[in-house]
Image 1 (cartoon, rainbow, N blue to C red):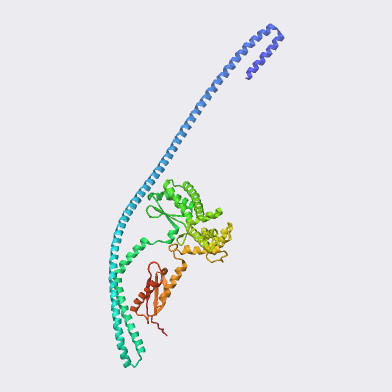
Image 2 (image 1 turned 60 degrees about the vertical axis):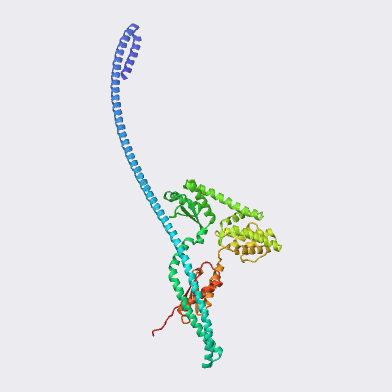
Length: 557
């Protein structure tokens, strides 16, 4: 580039000089200069072209080398990526194979469990068949025992007849003894008679006790063992527990596989169900059944309906469980209100606060001594209304007092205190009349009656509770029965102390060993049992055990 500039400068200088010298000479010089400049320019251009070509070739080589290097790096990266992908695929394949093996093991385990369950059911079925046969045999044996008992009774009657004959003979002997004693002992007739009667009475009692004990031992030897087995089987099949009746609900399942679905993977379904309902779900070996346990009957009913719907639907997972439980809760709340409104409509009672309706409806799921509380308060309302009509009191107010007198039982498991006081506070809160509030507070005698309608409600409550079959035995009646049993046993001579145990099903009697012999102890037990049968009303049977022991005590000094 510098040579070109020099050449241009020289041309310009030549042109300037040519104008000075002259036109022709300048023209000639100009032509020479132009030719020289053109040749130089061509040479310079050729050189530039040659250098450009060389640089282009060098750049091309560098570019080709760069492309080759990039291709090489791309091939290496591609190979590395393929190797990593293959390794990941192998690892994923191994994991999937492990999961398949685990699933196969689980399926095999389930198949084993199903086989064991089938074997267990077959054994259970055969055991039940054997038990039925055994029960039939025991029933036949009971018939036989009854026949033997009749024979024993006949023998006892025969012994009683003999006893009567002996008494007649005794009377004759007594008359003869009296005459002899009067002559020999110089005793009055009354004194001799008293002495003789005492001696004969002791002999007869001893003979009768010995015979009674012998008969009892013979009967016990033949019947005690089989009777115990029959009683044990009967108790096992027929005994019912009040706690289970009032706190447990059993839900039937279509099959045992449903238990696994209810439990869910790692127990997530059963945890979600218990959390949503507030109950304990017991899944044991009972075939095709699960147990719901909860002290709150409303929650237990919600859990029962929700579980039955989930089982029928088949979709059991935490989200579905929460959805079904929420829906059932709404339905139960509506059912509670409907039950209250139905009772209010039957009784013709209106202007009841909505919250009070909810509490009244909850009594549908509450029991007291085995009696449904909602049915009880409805019955009390009817009775209170009839009593009020007879004595000229306010019938509607008496019905209202009878209906709400036990309203505190709807919340007694949530609030501490007497249901009567709690109920009166609730009724006062929701604006019920004073007679209704007083009926709830006073129907168990905790406060004084202030209105005639509250007295009618309390009388109706006593009538409903005392109706035969309405309730189970109350605590007061139970205590009185226990005291009565002990007092009857202690009323016999020779008894030191009597204790009623086993909830009144057994009486243990301690006797004085110097006044009661071993033979007389058996006769005493029989006498006490007869007196209890005559004077006490009780369920089942009562065992009388007479204990006689002699203790010798001395001191080493």
